[in-house]
Length: 313
Image (cartoon, rainbow, N blue to C red):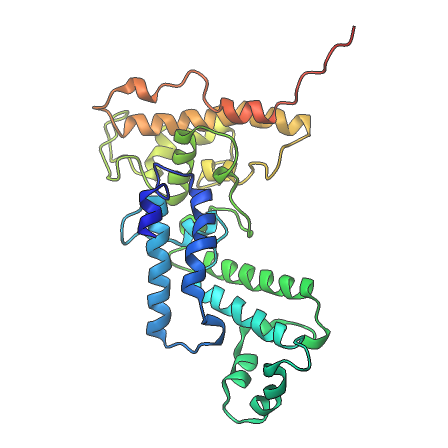
């Protein structure tokens, strides 16, 4: 992972979405080798989770102790404990459809008859297998995928509804999908600011006195009030995070509705301007020219704007 980090899997190199995909394709399979047929102690599982978390923090340029739940959620990446459950469920499912002359098919009756065998424990304790409505031999691959998705969604819902540690995650998308801010057309700075807002990272990394009102520290909560985000975005005040509320409404594909296009065209530049102002206020001693953009959000607006009809002579 450190070799890939040196050649582009870092915040200043490839996009975080692409870096996460490369990690899932090339690095994570090495961590997953043999997990489907292995037993784990709690300490082993913690070590595997730490290994994945270290890779994710490299991709995002995060602090060594930063929480990774939102980082994984933004790119639809399951935890290693969830991956173990998925791999074990797929292993049990595929074992049901092996050829009759396969070695495992021949020895499986012995394993099923043996008390305390790992195979029996695997079938009995797999959380995904237990929630499937049908017998495995009658189950289609689509139903298995639906069961895996339900398992992941239930885990996400339980984390979002937790009493502690879920405030930022509860402001993100409530379903399993790659967050649109990871792939929609926008400049690197605009994308970085959106991701940092999702993660709860303030520009500069530390709380500074508010240079606008000079009354309190420029926290995220104060920034929402000081920059008048609710009124500028016309979002009700009962929404605690107006920017996240708007980001959750970003399209998951190129919109075709004129009303939808008009809404994005009107409010997306305001979002970019607010985040740009937030960046500027947190760096009062820096060159303010770098925080000025005459056309904020133009990349996304050009992408959603339908081409003008061609006039035929």
